[in-house]
Image 1 (cartoon, helix red, strand yellow):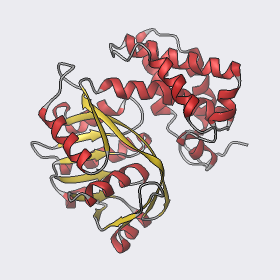
Image 2: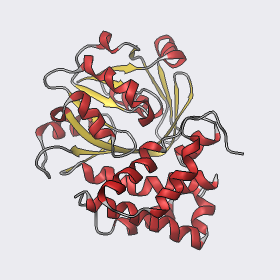
Image 3: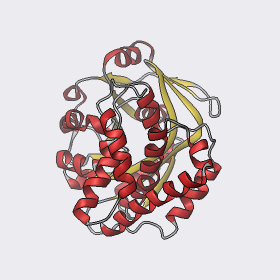
Image 4: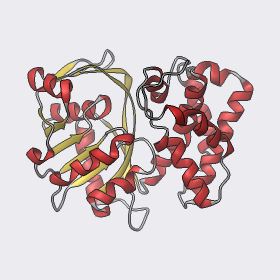
Length: 312
């Protein structure tokens, strides 16, 4: 396949490198020092558990130079959508697939507004990577999982293009899972991610001390239930035991784990609070679903959305 990765940082760059290593023609859309490093030395992946490797990939800043591709992977931070998503247009052909891997639930519609609903497949990913330096991505652990499926039209359904994409990802040593309704895995991650980002960001603590406190833990799970109720109000059939799965999952993760929002917050960078907590609040108003805990977390974190201001 001819594949373009829009947002070739820690997540998009990693998956682009895996696909390139498997023999696909991959073009990484990047900018600045990261772009220069990829052009000069290639894209290096360091993974103590899975092995290090470097790929030589074409890298471009201007997507007009990329031209039409078979697949566009969208992995930019959601707060960059207004400027980044229009870059998809020059890469679209009649049969181009656009796979979204962004945090949040609004990006599917935002991508579809640019690419058209017929091209979009919704996905979510579970991975721990970091852009440690220009041209260098470091992976922690072995997770490299993408769950995706159709998100528009009559659902659930398994299309031939979902099968084709699954084969390409699996063949690149990516843990690929398909869903008949691609909205479900996106919302199920969202139900977990928003409270995780909110409570770790608001407390400035990793998940360990947050989860160890019985009161905070109960509030965390109630926040998950708020978003679960919103999902059902919007007609998304998330699993009946989604909260129990979240509780079991958090019990098993290292207490030192910090959400990406907390990491960005501590570094004075922009944070995805609008795509996470803001999206919940806005949709909850429209649906008439009370979300008191998420609303409070949104109020606490909203001032830090543009970055630069570091918490005291």
